[in-house]
Image (cartoon, rainbow, N blue to C red; front, side, top):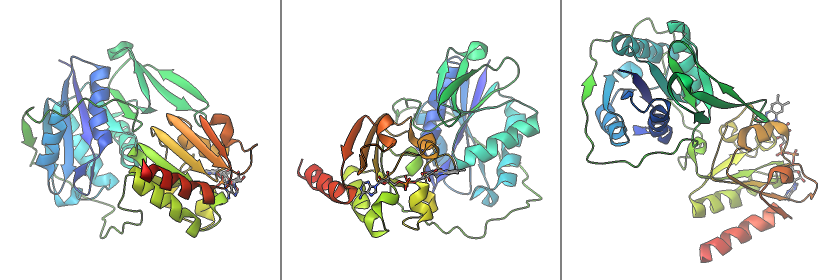
Length: 322
Ligand code: FAD
């Protein structure tokens, strides 16, 4: 029987949405496969495993170890290889997050397997399935087929529709307590969180992003206020990060985060190709820019020509009254 491993990613003990999306993707890859969730951590792994089962995994495997408290390539690769060797899966799905991007190629290289990364869609299923991924900074798509070996992919967050959680769903959760994680070259001694504790940018359904047009750190304040009203995350162009208006953890684009929210509001962003690479697949794009010729209007569904520093607060006031 075919079997697909889906890896759960925890952030502050909570399973990230993209992990549930890996289950949806696994079902699309092979609807007859047994889906086994894999959870690594130092605490709360059983709860996380049960969550994965509620979202459609048939069973789960946990590895609970102090060395898996935070992501480190060595520790996670060792644990992943041990689970894979035990389970012998026909497929593996990870989120295309900063962790997934780092871990998946390491696993593939250890297994001598192929890997299709950053997929946004699947056509067909099984060995005939085509994995679709954006290339050339999102200007084109390529379709990949895996003819031999593991069906191993990473999925871009927000592109696979979750099945609704079923709180009554149950499945076996097995703790693998005989895995030895050793010879670590990196140990994390402290994590200092710089980005806001608000909505996770990579998974946000609504993003309000600011650019150099906002002119200062102060200019970003109305964006945070609007984000609060809408339950959105704040993002930025590299121009704004380079100018010191916000932290680099907010950068969206070719060398920043790739996002696919339902709504992207770009404020004072010109629309350079490197920025578009990170957001052009957003479902609805609204651009606010002083310059009617700004490139961002070429991809925007709705455009507002004007001063973002005036428009964003007005937008916030109006939405609050609704
Ligand atoms: P600008 O291009 O300066 O645009 C500012 C915009 O604000 C203008 O369109 C202007 O009309 C408008 N404006 C001014 N005042 C107002 C106002 N009051 N109200 C409304 N609009 C106003 N960029 C990224 O974003 N992400 C990346 O990951 C990234 N990676 C890169 C990688 C490489 C290798 C290179 C070479 C570049 C990369 N860049 C990236 C940089 C990119 O090329 C642009 O320089 C950057 O995106 C520009 O940021 P911006 O749109 O905020 O600034």
